[in-house]
Length: 420
Image (tube, rainbow, N blue to C red; front, side, top):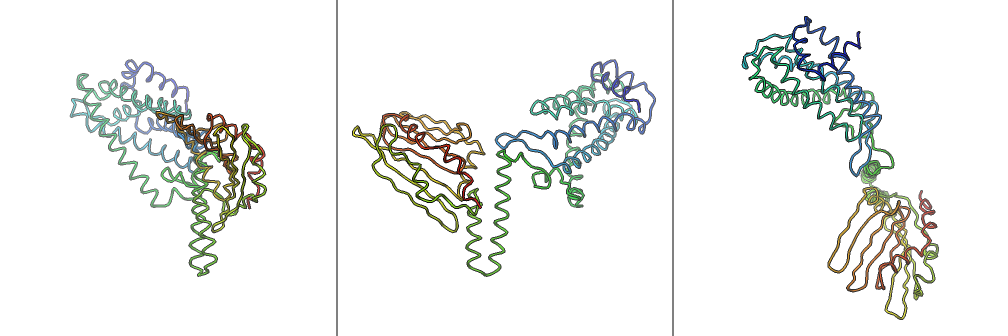
């Protein structure tokens, strides 16, 4: 196989189509030689690029993170797309040949296949760029559009249609080809799916690549965390169903707790900090305000523990703040899911504002009203602990100082304690 010849032809048809099409039209070849010496290889390069982009590099998805197909799913997808490219080239050539007389052209099966193959060159070459994030998709789209132009330029030479009718010939061919290609893809993937071919040996089809066997997001990305949440829900649901069938009320109650814990995005077995320990994080004074009262408690419902400590601080100037530190325990995942989803908000009112944002790895919610001189400042620490200051103060900076007066680093260091 002369790869230099393939590269030279691809370069010529892309760079100088008006002079290359007459050369192509005058060449003597057969359908088999055309596929063996050109179509097979360029379609294969495009399929290889899709495998690299899907399974090795991955695709960045807004909010969710980077998604990668599993190696098996990516390889299967590439092979199927390569085979479809060969089949589609043959069908496109057949369509070009069938429509030739309608637009004043001459039917010629080999010339029609030439037209299809070399018009597809732009799409195949541009598809290599799909390994690039974001920009690759735009380049691939540009390749498909340029392929339509190549078809328009080539039809008068290969199919001998009048130049003034090449535009209509091109438009009709492309529209029919798009519809036929869509139907072909549905039929082929549907048959493969029902036959089980795409699931053999751990391979997953392009319609099922969101499953655990087919692929996954990066573990620490929002998409990866959401996948983990879905898996936890699935497992908890199975356990609840088994417990219900067993007829054991205690087992059923425990399993129900597991479902609730999974729904909250946390673990079913997390022992929250003891009241005395969490109360120790409340300082004697904050922002110049003395502590006037303090309390702590730990509560549990169907196996989900949450503990919290609360203190009040005030002065003689009318400032009064409530500072609360909470260990979300088994429900900690609810706060974590908000962080993974990158939930952010910024809203202004006539007298104040409200916003939610990330400060490093910590989620922050901030609300302030200038009219009443009151507000709230909350920070999620270690994706498990909530530290909240609220009440009346001279400014929101007092609330921020109250939260920062807590040993946040010490709390963060305890994020794994009690997790079983």
